[in-house]
Length: 53
Image (cartoon, rainbow, N blue to C red; front, side, top):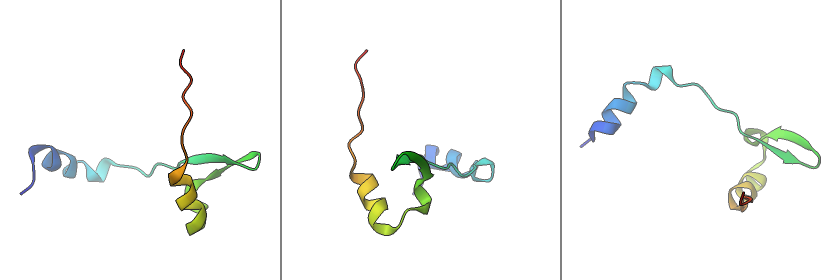
């Protein structure tokens, strides 16, 4: 059974666009989707740094 939120989101599927995620690798930026399977797994395991302001 779908929830109200799922019904609302599914009605907006035609308005969605693809989002490319880039990351810095070896001094330049590359899209994550072009990574091989091993590199994609490594990227998912990364810990992200957040500086406290």
